[in-house]
Length: 434
Image 1 (spheres, rainbow, N blue to C red):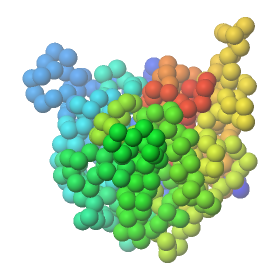
Image 2 (spheres, helix red, strand yellow):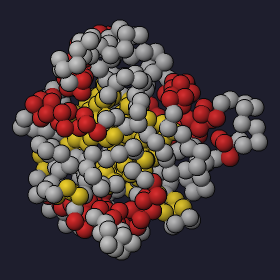
Image 3 (cartoon, rainbow, N blue to C red):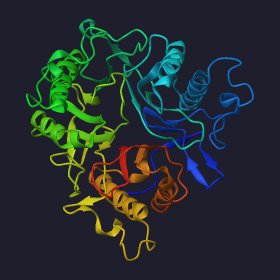
Image 4 (cartoon, rainbow, N blue to C red):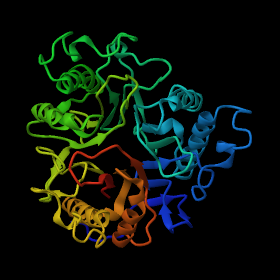
């Protein structure tokens, strides 16, 4: 049980955005970790997109706008890591969201130029909208502060080569932790699209379920071999983010997922993506993974705080050493969206559904944190998936009620749907355990 709500973390380069008095932490130092969440092409984090990025008077005079945006993001991330006592060579995971596929190549070109041969496991997906006008890219980084043998070790199995334009490592190990890149059911031969065994037989309408075929292939042919190469296994997976583009795929995917994790399911967040949402236009799913080494000193601990998870058979959270990963949180009970968040047709303007959802979610998050021996005040990464970004501000106000005055490491993106009728926000939270 945590003895205090005082955070054990340090906000790096915190700012207060005058519009709305939004307190944002571009970085968080938590022991040996640094988190840089929600990075955008802004110069100062407080006044929108950088004028040098948008260049409205001469938008095509120099390099493309999307490359300028990516360069500004990596400049900002580098500053955060430097203040936290690290650098870009110590990044262990990077996640990118884009609003357009056109952003990917300029971003990848910039990332290769900055990180060179130190590109860690990566996940790229498409979202609908971001918080800033003119923003088309958002980046989240996890890095470490090197200490003795606690340093990144890149793992690049030859039998699962990554296309050189992406250049990231399929897996990376740091101490007892293993990070695996976002994996799709693409063929091992570039240019062939989805793997044959992950596709429905040609001309057949009911010889398999597409999402199940892709999920099985990813787990068995992509994730398991990468874990093995890093000295881990499915039994020691502690966190997964699963991106899917079709609401009808969520339940059949969960059937496959539960089969592979019958007793020790990792903290799992199922995240809607745009359509198409991935580098393969016909892909339905991408999964990224964090795990522990099978014979390491750090153990996987399932946390039970009596909170209803977002999906059947999911763990509420998993503690892995000094990190707590909470499964994707929705404001639901056994009847669906909680009653307090439902709009009464007779009184449509009385109350706020988003505020009720957030109060419920943060209350449950605090219960989980206490059960794991920490506090919500030690949150190091906040991802909010909204169906309407106009709800971000009232959602932020609820955060300030729970953690008044604290600068928060947040990202908010707009997704096309959530798989529970009436739910308009999903939270994915990572918390430090001192």
